[in-house]
Image (cartoon, rainbow, N blue to C red):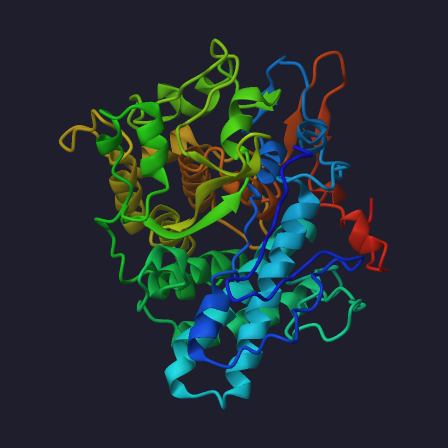
Length: 491
Protein backbone atom coordinates (compact mmCIF):
# COMPACT_ATOMS: atom_id res chain seq x y z
CA UNK A 1 0.00 0.00 0.00
CA UNK A 2 2.81 2.38 0.90
CA UNK A 3 4.25 2.20 -2.61
CA UNK A 4 1.02 3.23 -4.27
CA UNK A 5 1.85 6.76 -5.30
CA UNK A 6 -1.45 8.58 -5.61
CA UNK A 7 -1.24 11.48 -8.02
CA UNK A 8 -4.47 13.36 -8.60
CA UNK A 9 -3.89 16.05 -11.17
CA UNK A 10 -5.98 18.18 -13.48
CA UNK A 11 -5.85 17.58 -17.20
CA UNK A 12 -5.24 21.27 -17.69
CA UNK A 13 -2.15 21.34 -15.46
CA UNK A 14 -3.85 22.78 -12.41
CA UNK A 15 -2.26 20.87 -9.59
CA UNK A 16 -3.98 20.40 -6.29
CA UNK A 17 -1.50 19.10 -3.72
CA UNK A 18 -1.90 18.14 -0.11
CA UNK A 19 -0.86 20.48 2.68
CA UNK A 20 -1.45 20.89 6.38
CA UNK A 21 -4.93 22.15 5.61
CA UNK A 22 -7.68 19.51 5.56
CA UNK A 23 -8.82 20.82 2.21
CA UNK A 24 -6.59 20.99 -0.84
CA UNK A 25 -4.00 23.64 -1.51
CA UNK A 26 -5.31 26.37 -3.77
CA UNK A 27 -5.03 25.71 -7.51
CA UNK A 28 -2.01 27.11 -9.29
CA UNK A 29 -3.02 30.67 -10.14
CA UNK A 30 -0.52 30.80 -12.99
CA UNK A 31 -2.90 28.67 -15.04
CA UNK A 32 -5.91 30.60 -16.25
CA UNK A 33 -9.27 28.88 -16.63
CA UNK A 34 -10.40 31.18 -19.39
CA UNK A 35 -12.15 29.05 -22.00
CA UNK A 36 -15.20 26.77 -22.04
CA UNK A 37 -12.95 23.86 -23.00
CA UNK A 38 -10.78 24.33 -19.90
CA UNK A 39 -13.86 24.52 -17.69
CA UNK A 40 -15.15 21.26 -19.13
CA UNK A 41 -11.80 19.60 -18.47
CA UNK A 42 -11.76 21.01 -14.95
CA UNK A 43 -15.11 19.39 -14.19
CA UNK A 44 -13.71 15.95 -14.98
CA UNK A 45 -12.05 16.15 -11.56
CA UNK A 46 -15.12 17.49 -9.72
CA UNK A 47 -16.07 13.99 -8.55
CA UNK A 48 -14.45 12.14 -5.59
CA UNK A 49 -11.72 9.96 -7.02
CA UNK A 50 -11.63 7.72 -3.95
CA UNK A 51 -14.04 5.11 -2.60
CA UNK A 52 -16.24 5.12 0.50
CA UNK A 53 -17.58 1.61 -0.16
CA UNK A 54 -15.41 -0.35 2.27
CA UNK A 55 -15.78 2.25 5.03
CA UNK A 56 -19.58 2.36 4.96
CA UNK A 57 -20.09 -1.34 4.25
CA UNK A 58 -17.88 -2.49 7.12
CA UNK A 59 -19.75 -0.29 9.60
CA UNK A 60 -23.08 -1.86 8.57
CA UNK A 61 -24.80 -5.09 9.55
CA UNK A 62 -23.78 -6.69 6.25
CA UNK A 63 -20.45 -7.86 7.68
CA UNK A 64 -19.44 -10.42 10.31
CA UNK A 65 -16.31 -11.75 11.96
CA UNK A 66 -15.25 -14.47 9.52
CA UNK A 67 -12.26 -15.57 11.56
CA UNK A 68 -9.68 -14.71 8.90
CA UNK A 69 -6.44 -13.17 10.18
CA UNK A 70 -6.64 -9.39 10.49
CA UNK A 71 -4.42 -7.91 7.79
CA UNK A 72 -5.67 -4.33 7.56
CA UNK A 73 -6.18 -2.49 10.83
CA UNK A 74 -8.67 -0.15 9.20
CA UNK A 75 -11.00 -3.09 8.52
CA UNK A 76 -11.23 -3.75 12.26
CA UNK A 77 -11.44 -0.02 13.04
CA UNK A 78 -14.34 0.46 10.63
CA UNK A 79 -16.04 -2.60 12.10
CA UNK A 80 -15.79 -1.02 15.56
CA UNK A 81 -16.79 2.48 14.37
CA UNK A 82 -13.36 3.95 15.15
CA UNK A 83 -11.23 6.51 13.37
CA UNK A 84 -8.72 5.07 10.90
CA UNK A 85 -5.11 5.41 12.00
CA UNK A 86 -3.82 4.47 8.53
CA UNK A 87 -4.58 7.98 7.39
CA UNK A 88 -2.18 7.97 4.41
CA UNK A 89 -3.59 4.89 2.64
CA UNK A 90 -6.28 4.70 0.01
CA UNK A 91 -9.73 3.48 1.09
CA UNK A 92 -9.35 5.18 4.47
CA UNK A 93 -11.71 7.68 6.03
CA UNK A 94 -9.21 10.55 5.74
CA UNK A 95 -8.55 9.83 2.07
CA UNK A 96 -12.22 9.93 1.20
CA UNK A 97 -12.63 13.17 3.18
CA UNK A 98 -9.78 14.71 1.20
CA UNK A 99 -11.12 13.34 -2.10
CA UNK A 100 -14.47 15.00 -1.52
CA UNK A 101 -12.95 18.38 -0.70
CA UNK A 102 -10.59 18.15 -3.68
CA UNK A 103 -13.61 17.50 -5.90
CA UNK A 104 -15.36 20.47 -4.30
CA UNK A 105 -12.33 22.66 -5.00
CA UNK A 106 -12.52 21.77 -8.69
CA UNK A 107 -16.24 22.48 -8.82
CA UNK A 108 -15.74 25.84 -7.11
CA UNK A 109 -12.93 26.78 -9.48
CA UNK A 110 -15.17 25.95 -12.44
CA UNK A 111 -17.99 28.09 -11.03
CA UNK A 112 -15.60 30.98 -10.45
CA UNK A 113 -14.26 30.71 -14.01
CA UNK A 114 -17.79 30.74 -15.42
CA UNK A 115 -18.55 33.92 -13.46
CA UNK A 116 -15.33 35.53 -14.69
CA UNK A 117 -16.40 34.79 -18.26
CA UNK A 118 -19.64 36.67 -17.63
CA UNK A 119 -21.83 33.62 -16.90
CA UNK A 120 -22.94 33.16 -20.52
CA UNK A 121 -25.97 30.96 -21.17
CA UNK A 122 -23.75 28.71 -23.27
CA UNK A 123 -22.00 27.63 -20.04
CA UNK A 124 -25.20 26.88 -18.13
CA UNK A 125 -24.71 23.10 -18.54
CA UNK A 126 -21.24 23.35 -17.01
CA UNK A 127 -22.56 25.51 -14.19
CA UNK A 128 -25.29 22.96 -13.53
CA UNK A 129 -22.80 20.10 -13.45
CA UNK A 130 -20.49 21.99 -11.09
CA UNK A 131 -23.35 22.74 -8.70
CA UNK A 132 -24.51 19.12 -8.67
CA UNK A 133 -20.97 17.85 -8.20
CA UNK A 134 -20.36 20.30 -5.35
CA UNK A 135 -23.60 19.21 -3.70
CA UNK A 136 -22.82 15.51 -4.10
CA UNK A 137 -19.46 15.67 -2.33
CA UNK A 138 -20.86 17.80 0.49
CA UNK A 139 -23.81 15.41 0.82
CA UNK A 140 -21.49 12.43 1.17
CA UNK A 141 -19.39 14.27 3.74
CA UNK A 142 -22.35 15.26 5.90
CA UNK A 143 -23.82 11.76 5.57
CA UNK A 144 -20.64 10.17 6.91
CA UNK A 145 -19.21 12.76 9.33
CA UNK A 146 -22.35 14.17 10.94
CA UNK A 147 -25.37 12.90 12.81
CA UNK A 148 -28.36 11.81 10.76
CA UNK A 149 -30.63 14.56 9.47
CA UNK A 150 -33.34 15.35 11.99
CA UNK A 151 -35.15 18.71 11.64
CA UNK A 152 -35.73 18.79 15.40
CA UNK A 153 -31.98 18.91 16.13
CA UNK A 154 -30.41 19.91 12.79
CA UNK A 155 -29.92 23.55 13.80
CA UNK A 156 -27.58 22.53 16.61
CA UNK A 157 -26.05 19.32 15.24
CA UNK A 158 -22.52 19.71 13.89
CA UNK A 159 -22.31 19.29 10.13
CA UNK A 160 -19.27 19.81 7.91
CA UNK A 161 -17.75 22.92 6.32
CA UNK A 162 -19.75 23.80 3.20
CA UNK A 163 -17.20 25.41 0.91
CA UNK A 164 -18.51 27.61 -1.91
CA UNK A 165 -15.41 29.57 -2.95
CA UNK A 166 -11.98 28.54 -4.22
CA UNK A 167 -9.21 28.84 -1.67
CA UNK A 168 -7.09 31.96 -2.00
CA UNK A 169 -4.70 31.31 0.88
CA UNK A 170 -2.25 28.48 1.45
CA UNK A 171 -3.93 27.47 4.72
CA UNK A 172 -7.54 28.45 5.25
CA UNK A 173 -9.35 28.05 8.54
CA UNK A 174 -12.84 26.57 8.29
CA UNK A 175 -15.68 26.10 10.73
CA UNK A 176 -18.33 23.43 10.70
CA UNK A 177 -21.75 24.47 9.49
CA UNK A 178 -24.70 22.95 11.28
CA UNK A 179 -26.54 20.06 9.66
CA UNK A 180 -29.44 22.44 8.95
CA UNK A 181 -27.13 24.92 7.22
CA UNK A 182 -25.51 22.16 5.16
CA UNK A 183 -28.92 20.88 4.03
CA UNK A 184 -30.00 24.41 3.10
CA UNK A 185 -26.86 24.85 1.01
CA UNK A 186 -27.39 21.41 -0.55
CA UNK A 187 -30.96 22.16 -1.52
CA UNK A 188 -29.97 25.49 -3.07
CA UNK A 189 -27.21 23.90 -5.17
CA UNK A 190 -29.36 20.93 -6.16
CA UNK A 191 -32.37 23.00 -7.21
CA UNK A 192 -30.27 25.39 -9.26
CA UNK A 193 -28.26 22.57 -10.76
CA UNK A 194 -31.35 20.62 -11.79
CA UNK A 195 -32.48 23.55 -13.92
CA UNK A 196 -29.22 23.69 -15.85
CA UNK A 197 -27.82 20.19 -16.38
CA UNK A 198 -28.04 18.54 -19.79
CA UNK A 199 -27.15 15.22 -21.44
CA UNK A 200 -24.66 16.67 -23.90
CA UNK A 201 -21.60 14.56 -23.09
CA UNK A 202 -19.46 12.16 -25.08
CA UNK A 203 -19.32 9.91 -21.99
CA UNK A 204 -22.55 10.81 -20.17
CA UNK A 205 -22.23 8.13 -17.46
CA UNK A 206 -19.26 9.98 -15.96
CA UNK A 207 -21.14 13.26 -15.53
CA UNK A 208 -24.20 14.64 -13.78
CA UNK A 209 -26.69 14.23 -16.60
CA UNK A 210 -30.37 14.99 -16.12
CA UNK A 211 -31.17 11.45 -14.95
CA UNK A 212 -28.13 11.23 -12.64
CA UNK A 213 -28.98 14.62 -11.14
CA UNK A 214 -32.56 13.58 -10.47
CA UNK A 215 -31.44 10.30 -8.93
CA UNK A 216 -29.07 12.12 -6.57
CA UNK A 217 -31.74 14.69 -5.74
CA UNK A 218 -34.17 11.88 -4.91
CA UNK A 219 -31.64 10.47 -2.42
CA UNK A 220 -31.32 13.89 -0.80
CA UNK A 221 -35.07 14.47 -0.57
CA UNK A 222 -35.65 10.94 0.73
CA UNK A 223 -33.36 11.74 3.65
CA UNK A 224 -35.12 15.05 4.15
CA UNK A 225 -38.58 13.43 4.03
CA UNK A 226 -39.96 15.32 1.05
CA UNK A 227 -41.94 12.47 -0.52
CA UNK A 228 -43.68 14.57 -3.16
CA UNK A 229 -40.33 15.76 -4.47
CA UNK A 230 -38.94 12.22 -4.67
CA UNK A 231 -41.98 11.09 -6.66
CA UNK A 232 -41.94 14.02 -9.08
CA UNK A 233 -38.21 13.60 -9.69
CA UNK A 234 -38.73 9.94 -10.60
CA UNK A 235 -41.81 10.34 -12.80
CA UNK A 236 -39.77 9.64 -15.93
CA UNK A 237 -38.97 6.18 -14.52
CA UNK A 238 -42.61 5.25 -14.21
CA UNK A 239 -43.93 2.42 -12.06
CA UNK A 240 -42.41 -0.38 -14.14
CA UNK A 241 -39.11 0.97 -15.46
CA UNK A 242 -37.31 -0.91 -18.19
CA UNK A 243 -33.94 0.49 -17.20
CA UNK A 244 -33.21 -1.69 -14.16
CA UNK A 245 -30.20 -3.99 -13.94
CA UNK A 246 -30.83 -7.14 -15.97
CA UNK A 247 -29.19 -9.87 -13.91
CA UNK A 248 -30.22 -12.52 -16.42
CA UNK A 249 -27.52 -11.21 -18.77
CA UNK A 250 -24.88 -11.92 -16.11
CA UNK A 251 -25.72 -15.62 -15.81
CA UNK A 252 -23.63 -16.90 -18.75
CA UNK A 253 -20.63 -14.66 -17.97
CA UNK A 254 -17.45 -15.52 -16.14
CA UNK A 255 -16.54 -13.75 -12.91
CA UNK A 256 -14.28 -11.12 -14.50
CA UNK A 257 -16.80 -10.38 -17.23
CA UNK A 258 -19.50 -9.95 -14.59
CA UNK A 259 -17.25 -7.46 -12.79
CA UNK A 260 -16.67 -5.54 -16.00
CA UNK A 261 -20.34 -5.58 -16.86
CA UNK A 262 -21.49 -4.30 -13.49
CA UNK A 263 -19.67 -0.97 -13.84
CA UNK A 264 -19.89 -0.64 -17.62
CA UNK A 265 -20.92 2.69 -19.11
CA UNK A 266 -23.35 1.10 -21.58
CA UNK A 267 -25.46 -0.53 -18.86
CA UNK A 268 -28.70 1.45 -18.75
CA UNK A 269 -29.16 1.46 -15.00
CA UNK A 270 -25.72 2.98 -14.36
CA UNK A 271 -26.40 6.72 -14.16
CA UNK A 272 -23.14 7.96 -12.63
CA UNK A 273 -19.82 6.14 -12.62
CA UNK A 274 -16.50 7.23 -11.17
CA UNK A 275 -13.08 5.73 -11.78
CA UNK A 276 -12.04 5.42 -8.14
CA UNK A 277 -8.51 4.90 -6.89
CA UNK A 278 -9.25 1.89 -4.69
CA UNK A 279 -8.47 -1.74 -3.92
CA UNK A 280 -12.08 -2.47 -2.97
CA UNK A 281 -12.14 -5.38 -5.40
CA UNK A 282 -9.47 -7.21 -3.41
CA UNK A 283 -10.81 -6.51 0.05
CA UNK A 284 -13.95 -8.62 -0.18
CA UNK A 285 -11.77 -11.71 -0.42
CA UNK A 286 -9.24 -10.81 2.26
CA UNK A 287 -10.93 -8.67 4.94
CA UNK A 288 -11.66 -10.49 8.18
CA UNK A 289 -14.80 -8.46 8.81
CA UNK A 290 -16.75 -9.22 5.71
CA UNK A 291 -19.79 -10.92 4.22
CA UNK A 292 -19.55 -14.42 5.66
CA UNK A 293 -20.35 -17.60 3.80
CA UNK A 294 -21.75 -19.02 7.02
CA UNK A 295 -24.07 -16.04 7.57
CA UNK A 296 -25.05 -15.43 3.94
CA UNK A 297 -28.50 -17.05 4.29
CA UNK A 298 -29.48 -14.39 6.82
CA UNK A 299 -29.41 -11.78 4.04
CA UNK A 300 -29.72 -13.78 0.81
CA UNK A 301 -31.47 -17.01 1.73
CA UNK A 302 -34.73 -18.02 0.04
CA UNK A 303 -36.52 -17.28 3.31
CA UNK A 304 -35.71 -13.58 2.81
CA UNK A 305 -37.38 -13.53 -0.61
CA UNK A 306 -41.03 -12.51 -0.51
CA UNK A 307 -41.67 -15.17 -3.18
CA UNK A 308 -39.78 -17.80 -1.17
CA UNK A 309 -37.36 -18.38 -4.03
CA UNK A 310 -33.65 -18.06 -4.75
CA UNK A 311 -32.25 -14.74 -6.01
CA UNK A 312 -30.21 -13.96 -9.10
CA UNK A 313 -27.30 -12.89 -6.88
CA UNK A 314 -24.44 -15.34 -7.49
CA UNK A 315 -21.64 -15.20 -4.95
CA UNK A 316 -18.08 -16.38 -5.31
CA UNK A 317 -15.20 -17.02 -2.95
CA UNK A 318 -11.43 -17.41 -3.11
CA UNK A 319 -11.08 -18.89 0.38
CA UNK A 320 -13.49 -21.80 0.61
CA UNK A 321 -16.57 -19.62 1.28
CA UNK A 322 -15.16 -18.10 4.45
CA UNK A 323 -15.86 -14.77 2.79
CA UNK A 324 -18.04 -14.16 -0.24
CA UNK A 325 -18.18 -11.52 -2.93
CA UNK A 326 -20.63 -10.50 -5.61
CA UNK A 327 -18.73 -9.68 -8.83
CA UNK A 328 -19.02 -5.89 -8.96
CA UNK A 329 -15.50 -4.46 -8.96
CA UNK A 330 -13.01 -5.02 -11.77
CA UNK A 331 -9.63 -3.56 -10.92
CA UNK A 332 -7.51 -1.90 -13.55
CA UNK A 333 -3.95 -1.43 -12.31
CA UNK A 334 -2.17 1.41 -14.06
CA UNK A 335 1.57 0.91 -13.72
CA UNK A 336 3.83 3.88 -13.24
CA UNK A 337 6.85 1.59 -12.98
CA UNK A 338 6.33 -1.96 -14.25
CA UNK A 339 9.70 -3.22 -13.01
CA UNK A 340 9.11 -1.96 -9.48
CA UNK A 341 5.48 -3.01 -9.54
CA UNK A 342 4.33 0.49 -8.60
CA UNK A 343 1.16 2.05 -9.83
CA UNK A 344 -2.43 2.94 -9.08
CA UNK A 345 -5.43 0.60 -8.85
CA UNK A 346 -8.74 1.84 -10.27
CA UNK A 347 -12.27 0.48 -10.15
CA UNK A 348 -15.33 1.75 -12.03
CA UNK A 349 -17.76 2.35 -9.18
CA UNK A 350 -21.46 3.00 -9.76
CA UNK A 351 -22.44 5.97 -7.58
CA UNK A 352 -26.03 6.37 -8.81
CA UNK A 353 -28.36 3.96 -10.60
CA UNK A 354 -31.93 3.51 -11.77
CA UNK A 355 -32.23 0.67 -9.27
CA UNK A 356 -31.69 2.96 -6.29
CA UNK A 357 -33.76 5.68 -7.96
CA UNK A 358 -36.74 3.30 -8.31
CA UNK A 359 -36.43 2.09 -4.71
CA UNK A 360 -36.47 5.72 -3.58
CA UNK A 361 -39.67 6.28 -5.57
CA UNK A 362 -41.19 3.15 -4.05
CA UNK A 363 -40.38 4.30 -0.52
CA UNK A 364 -41.90 7.72 -1.17
CA UNK A 365 -45.11 6.07 -2.38
CA UNK A 366 -45.28 4.12 0.87
CA UNK A 367 -44.84 7.27 2.92
CA UNK A 368 -47.58 8.99 0.90
CA UNK A 369 -49.92 6.15 1.85
CA UNK A 370 -50.00 4.76 -1.70
CA UNK A 371 -49.51 1.19 -0.50
CA UNK A 372 -51.15 -0.57 -3.46
CA UNK A 373 -48.89 1.28 -5.89
CA UNK A 374 -45.78 0.60 -3.82
CA UNK A 375 -46.80 -3.06 -3.54
CA UNK A 376 -46.95 -3.40 -7.33
CA UNK A 377 -43.62 -1.64 -7.72
CA UNK A 378 -41.94 -3.87 -5.15
CA UNK A 379 -43.28 -6.99 -6.84
CA UNK A 380 -41.98 -5.72 -10.17
CA UNK A 381 -38.53 -5.01 -8.73
CA UNK A 382 -38.23 -8.32 -6.91
CA UNK A 383 -39.30 -10.15 -10.07
CA UNK A 384 -36.21 -8.79 -11.82
CA UNK A 385 -34.09 -10.32 -9.04
CA UNK A 386 -35.83 -13.72 -8.95
CA UNK A 387 -35.02 -16.02 -11.90
CA UNK A 388 -37.98 -18.35 -11.34
CA UNK A 389 -40.55 -15.61 -10.76
CA UNK A 390 -43.97 -16.65 -12.02
CA UNK A 391 -46.37 -13.72 -12.55
CA UNK A 392 -49.36 -16.04 -12.24
CA UNK A 393 -48.48 -17.39 -8.81
CA UNK A 394 -45.91 -15.02 -7.28
CA UNK A 395 -48.22 -12.24 -6.22
CA UNK A 396 -47.19 -9.75 -3.57
CA UNK A 397 -49.88 -8.82 -1.09
CA UNK A 398 -50.02 -6.53 1.89
CA UNK A 399 -50.66 -9.53 4.13
CA UNK A 400 -47.52 -11.26 2.87
CA UNK A 401 -45.35 -8.17 3.38
CA UNK A 402 -46.68 -7.56 6.89
CA UNK A 403 -46.19 -11.22 7.83
CA UNK A 404 -42.57 -11.34 6.63
CA UNK A 405 -41.68 -7.89 7.96
CA UNK A 406 -43.66 -7.47 11.17
CA UNK A 407 -43.40 -4.33 13.23
CA UNK A 408 -40.80 -4.67 15.97
CA UNK A 409 -41.17 -1.95 18.63
CA UNK A 410 -38.40 0.65 18.52
CA UNK A 411 -36.61 -1.03 15.59
CA UNK A 412 -37.07 1.51 12.78
CA UNK A 413 -37.20 5.01 14.26
CA UNK A 414 -36.79 7.74 11.62
CA UNK A 415 -37.52 11.33 12.61
CA UNK A 416 -41.00 11.03 11.09
CA UNK A 417 -43.86 8.76 12.15
CA UNK A 418 -45.01 5.65 10.28
CA UNK A 419 -48.11 3.51 10.52
CA UNK A 420 -47.63 -0.24 11.14
CA UNK A 421 -48.26 -1.05 7.47
CA UNK A 422 -45.86 1.66 6.33
CA UNK A 423 -43.24 0.31 8.71
CA UNK A 424 -43.53 -3.20 7.25
CA UNK A 425 -43.19 -1.91 3.69
CA UNK A 426 -40.29 0.38 4.57
CA UNK A 427 -38.50 -2.58 6.15
CA UNK A 428 -39.16 -4.66 3.03
CA UNK A 429 -37.77 -1.95 0.77
CA UNK A 430 -34.76 -1.34 3.03
CA UNK A 431 -33.93 -5.05 3.02
CA UNK A 432 -34.29 -5.09 -0.78
CA UNK A 433 -31.90 -2.15 -1.03
CA UNK A 434 -29.55 -3.90 1.39
CA UNK A 435 -29.25 -6.93 -0.87
CA UNK A 436 -29.04 -5.09 -4.16
CA UNK A 437 -26.20 -2.83 -3.02
CA UNK A 438 -24.18 -5.34 -1.05
CA UNK A 439 -20.50 -4.22 -0.87
CA UNK A 440 -21.48 -0.67 -1.93
CA UNK A 441 -22.18 0.89 1.46
CA UNK A 442 -25.74 2.11 0.95
CA UNK A 443 -26.93 -0.04 3.84
CA UNK A 444 -25.01 2.19 6.26
CA UNK A 445 -27.02 5.24 5.24
CA UNK A 446 -30.27 3.36 5.87
CA UNK A 447 -28.94 2.32 9.28
CA UNK A 448 -28.32 5.97 10.08
CA UNK A 449 -31.58 7.49 8.89
CA UNK A 450 -33.72 4.72 10.40
CA UNK A 451 -31.59 4.66 13.57
CA UNK A 452 -31.20 0.87 13.38
CA UNK A 453 -29.22 -0.84 16.15
CA UNK A 454 -26.19 -2.80 14.91
CA UNK A 455 -24.47 -5.58 16.84
CA UNK A 456 -20.94 -6.49 15.81
CA UNK A 457 -19.45 -9.61 17.32
CA UNK A 458 -15.76 -10.44 17.47
CA UNK A 459 -14.27 -13.73 18.62
CA UNK A 460 -13.20 -13.73 22.25
CA UNK A 461 -14.51 -10.21 22.83
CA UNK A 462 -17.77 -8.78 24.15
CA UNK A 463 -20.24 -7.77 21.46
CA UNK A 464 -19.92 -4.18 20.29
CA UNK A 465 -23.37 -2.62 19.97
CA UNK A 466 -24.14 0.59 18.11
CA UNK A 467 -27.19 1.78 20.00
CA UNK A 468 -29.69 4.32 18.79
CA UNK A 469 -28.30 7.84 18.51
CA UNK A 470 -24.82 6.51 19.31
CA UNK A 471 -22.25 9.26 18.72
CA UNK A 472 -20.17 6.78 16.72
CA UNK A 473 -22.75 6.92 13.94
CA UNK A 474 -20.87 10.05 12.83
CA UNK A 475 -17.29 9.32 11.79
CA UNK A 476 -14.67 11.17 13.78
CA UNK A 477 -13.14 14.16 11.97
CA UNK A 478 -9.77 13.16 10.43
CA UNK A 479 -6.75 14.07 12.52
CA UNK A 480 -5.21 16.41 9.96
CA UNK A 481 -8.51 18.32 9.84
CA UNK A 482 -8.93 18.62 13.61
CA UNK A 483 -5.29 19.75 13.89
CA UNK A 484 -6.30 22.90 12.00
CA UNK A 485 -8.89 23.69 14.66
CA UNK A 486 -11.93 21.95 13.20
CA UNK A 487 -14.20 20.83 16.03
CA UNK A 488 -14.27 17.11 16.75
CA UNK A 489 -17.42 15.04 16.96
CA UNK A 490 -18.45 14.14 20.51
CA UNK A 491 -17.53 10.70 21.75
